[in-house]
Amino acid sequence: MQIAVLTFDGFNELDSFVASGILNRMKSRGWAAHITSPSPQVTSMNGVTITRQKPLEFAAEADAVLLGSGMLTREIARDDALLSRIRLDPRRQLIGAQCSGTLLLAKLGLIGDLPACTDLTTRPWVIEAGVKVVDRPFIAHGNVATAGGCLASQYLAAWVIARGGSPEDAAEALHYVAPVGEKEACVERAMAAVMPYLKDGEPAHRRASAPAVAPR
Amino acid sequence: MQIAVLTFDGFNELDSFVASGILNRMKSRGWAAHITSPSPQVTSMNGVTITRQKPLEFAAEADAVLLGSGMLTREIARDDALLSRIRLDPRRQLIGAQCSGTLLLAKLGLIGDLPACTDLTTRPWVIEAGVKVVDRPFIAHGNVATAGGCLASQYLAAWVIARGGSPEDAAEALHYVAPVGEKEACVERAMAAVMPYLKDGEPAHRRASAPAVAPR
Image 1: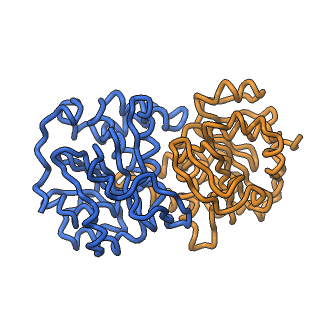
Image 2 (image 1 turned 120 degrees about the vertical axis):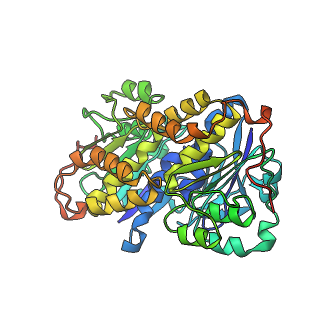
Image 3 (image 1 turned 135 degrees about the horizontal axis):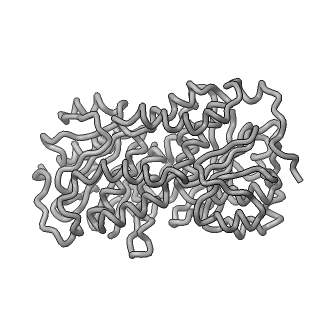
């Protein structure tokens, strides 16, 4: 699995790096999560400049795409030229959004009428964009998932691993990153959040999944 | 509070960015957490190159210093020239280490005979360095704290905020980053981990603290 973690100027470090860090625990299995950005360098909401690993167009060819969150998401959601560079296909890709990333997912026509998660700050803007927001950390409909609250990014990563690999792989990756002495409880909590949204634990690319909604 | 988050080549993204992201929730109060590195750019264990915000020497003047973890910590622990650039004073600074950062703290003479936390991979090397390792996510002795397991970095950040600000400030920062629908439980868990190590909730700079151990 090659995974694009979409990361824009003003990005929230927790959203991009908690997800990519956990996903890269699958490195020995040939997986890679790549920081994927519109420009060669992007600067976080706290002034950290990072060099992208893949250009935005990589999203079209990735097996999974996660849309991170940040301070400038409302501006990005209005930037049609930038949005047109993000080509996603929920019939063959796993797609997840974190916090204000849900707003971008809505603008890309990938949420439709289905309930979604977001953070408390973005909530009014996502509702304004016509999305039904639920007060939960994680929800998935077919191949499209949303998460709310920075640290819910671990649930998004767990879902991608469970779908593209297996629930056991997800539990193993979570176990590694969990606090010492709290590992079992931490893994159980995360797996309880994502398990209801796994149909059968079969790898995503071997399953003929219907898109969550038709892209508009 | 100006905080140095020590970040070396091969660094674990979760350790540096979960802590700095949570600490920077105090930005409106004049706090700043800075990615602090020996070279102008450092590259993570998963190939993400970032530009430092402060040079390593900044650690000497920071109010708090967190030592992150990474793939190359054993090499760094043997690099006396590099270690000599890190000047810490537990009498006036809050000092925390995450996972393999505990090994650096031991080499800097800041752990001594006191029990400390680290991750499961680093554990044998930390024990080899003469440290008593405890199977817990967080422990503090005076102004020196250690945490084990990537996501225990939230406890390290909470401790710094509780000590330099107040427990209420720490709870507020944690509440923001916690998953939606799990915020209260998440804050309670983190505060339960750090509260036993807060003497009276008074800001650190107004408290005359004895050093945890004498630097050697």
